[in-house]
Amino acid sequence: MASQNLDNFKQLVLQDTALQAKLRSASDQQDFVQQIVKIAQENGYSLTPEEVQEGLIPPSGEELNLEQLEAVAGGMMAQKCYITCGTCTVSYLP
Image: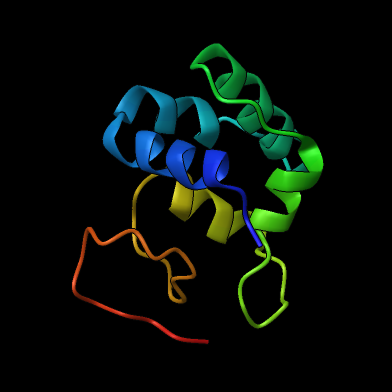
């Protein structure tokens, strides 16, 4: 289960296009996780790489690929949406 800090950080990223751009620059999933931990800390959130990694695993247990990670970081809707943020009325289930 994702931590409250991670959930709060996700909401911050959804509202901040500059943070989205920083996360989109990640070269792979490991870099993406490291960027999240770093940016979260810069914004007052304490996250571990393990918490972030756990938050990337959707309810089905399938890890997100880089394309899906970029879609989440960019605030776009991927083919499958695993983030419940309340910003849209569309629900994509795996």
